[in-house]
Length: 258
Length: 258
DNA sequence: AGGTGTAGTTAGCGA
DNA sequence: TCGCTAAGTACACCT
Image (cartoon, rainbow over all chains, first blue to last red; front, top):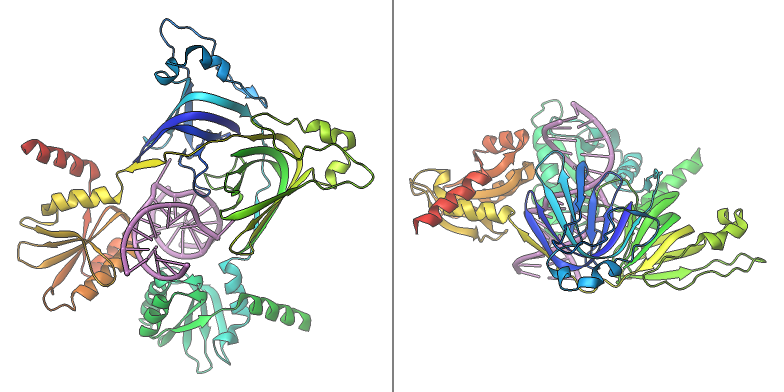
């Protein structure tokens, strides 16, 4: 990982054009040449970036009639005090960048071009291989718990299967209620209109199958937006609020029974 | 912006739990205390992070019976060679972190806890205010061009207006075809099923208005997924592939006429 | 502040 | 690889 702090300007051309006026920013260049430009603003998303696979080209524009000693290499785990390089000609600093970095996407004609006007720091650190992120507790868990505690949709309900396959994608949970009718359940952490649309598509399709119909729909989520609730109930779906903690504890209770 | 390179481990607890085993990584801490953890892996998304508003707490765990001089402050634009700090007790390095950074979300109980086992570099750079990103040329341009070149949907078509307002949101473009019937156009850069659903909602609503009905739907995009095409045509919508370059040039031609 | 739609989305999974 | 779905999505816009 190469870390550069510099006054820079940048232009991205690709699916859109996005440009950054000159300002002091942080650049991260990863081992695969992918490149991120950060400011103090915003969340984790960089202002501009290039994703791998890409090719990086770096050059030092020459100011005619004013040869200077410029750092062309990368200093390993040590800072470059670039001030000495440019202090000799403050005016030049505004017409010729100290370095130009161009990153081109390998599989498209996207280009990120960065002018480095003044480099405050440029360091390289070998990070090595990362063991990666271990996640625990997303929508999958809601699905897992509800599948185990299927009678939360009604007494006497039985689980058919999780990720019940259909031609247009898997239904989160398919169950059969006490009356023997099929129930398709769409699970969301936060239920919005799109989730209702999804459930609608599944139910419409499933109800064309004479072996399954009638298939009821249940829209289950930790929270459901008011609009989504109205839409769901307007389409005859039951809305079920899932209490993650309660479901988690219920599972613990189940486990202690064995 | 504070930039730390360190062997670290981290745990996030919030909407999910996500943990990182010990490895050498890059940490960015912004002026608002938001915090990003990067490895060489992945795209621009950090492995772990905390978004503002949040509060950062930093501490130096004390090894009982082994007082050491530890850097508690931040060094301005200069590196800390932390090796000297821990070299005296390599064993200790594995049981007590050199520093512990805890970042708590202000508006929830989300916590990102980072143990720094070995700090390679810790520098602070004042970036100042960023002029921000200037974007140019997204879906808005497609809408702009198609509105100007509305006969791309059929000879004799007339534009009613862009962003035609309805109770459930604006229709991208409303037009009237050569036969005098209304046409609702949904524009996407990449057309998927959700876009068809959106167009369906608009057309269903618009067709309830006796002054407008019949309203045809056109699904216009640079690319359309096969499933979306099937769904759109099944619902009686015409699919229109938009050629951005062609539309752009057509506009240039139009401009030269004046 | 909350809902809705877009994103140069990114990331993961299954066909 | 394509296509779909979730994401600690982020971000802009609008009510």
